Amino acid sequence: MDSLYILIPIAIVFVIIAAKVFFWAVDNHQFDDLDTEGQRILFDDDAPVKKSDSAPKASASDATDADSQSSGDDSQ
Image (tube, rainbow, N blue to C red; front, side):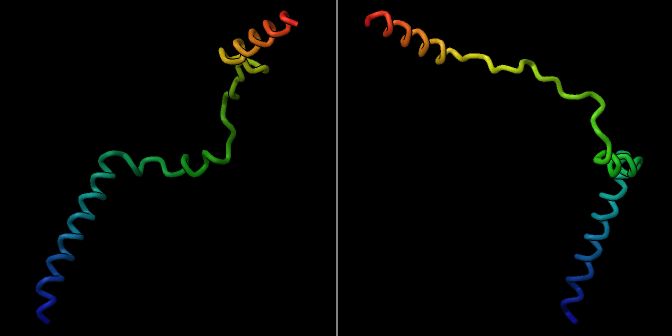
């Protein structure tokens, strides 16, 4: 019975916190449009993603490798 003196105030604090969180969500328009988020996964994106180039660009290390290979061919 003594535990009720501790559990009842704790329960009241939890209810107050839950009510504050609920009213915060309502004030910040969290519940305005519940259908759009559920339907967004069903539709494609409006604009397709554009690829910049079909061939990858050569990096600086590839250019130095090509230069070292061409210089080695000249010495033979």
